[in-house]
Amino acid sequence: MKQPTNRRSAHSKGPLASRADRHDLYQCAVQTPDAEIDFVDETFRTLRKRTARTLREDFCGTAFTSCEWVRRRKTNTAVGVDLDRSTLDWGIEHNIAPLKPPARARLTLLQEDVLTVRTPEPVDIVLAMNFSYSIFKRRETMRAYFKNVREGLAKDGVFMLDAFGGSDAFRVLKERRAIPKGPPGIGAFTYIWDQASYNPITGDSVCKIHFTLKDGSRVRDAFTYEWRLWTLPELREVLADAGFARSTVYWEGTDPKTNEGDGVFLPTEQGTPDLGWIAYIVAEK
Image 1 (tube, rainbow, N blue to C red):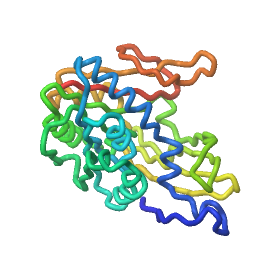
Image 2: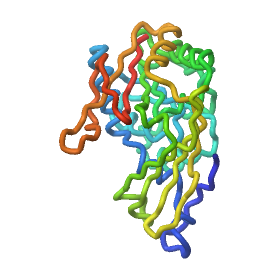
Image 3: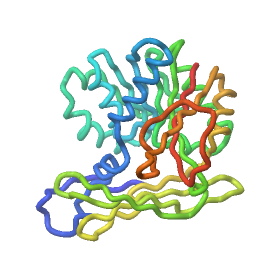
């Protein structure tokens, strides 16, 4: 669902929601590209005994993660792929333009379909994060996407995607989380994850993101996702059908003090039946 993305002065009159930018809020609340690239970099190095250089970010949105990748090393290059022109343009203005010129030159954006996209050269890593691949609801479509990913990888390339689940994932609910530091002029705000509907027969799910700002004003339906809720066994089976030699689940550990995820993801074949969890799947060509 498209929303206006124009920024206004932080000193404009009116409710904060009228001048808040949904992409700014999303990046503050949802994305941690430094931690994500730490995991990607370290996992690839562990698996392949070399340092990755080339990355393709599918469903890249504002290319926030791709920007982090090209900042890491002078040898790193990234290609971001997304269909939405307005979101790519926002990323160019707010994320790519501030990069130093050499880093900026090593990042390419493509307004193309991830089902058919081709890069000039095979890449070391393809990423599909923030569950965006869940837009593919049919097994044959997901398999076609995974096949295209595999064909775009180098001989020893690796595909990495995240997944979520747990018994709460199948419920209609809203979760609120305080974000202590928001964009300039906006300040602290509340992030709301809204699982608006779920059909247990088809697996179809509608999820939304809303924001409540410190003055009480709200950005409703900032993002709406019409997905299928895929399970880890299903995704791994489709990866195998698409020709990947092996897939491994990296499960998040638990902080004993908070009983929440600790941000450390380790390979395992034994998860825990939590109410909610996030994991990575790492598929090797």
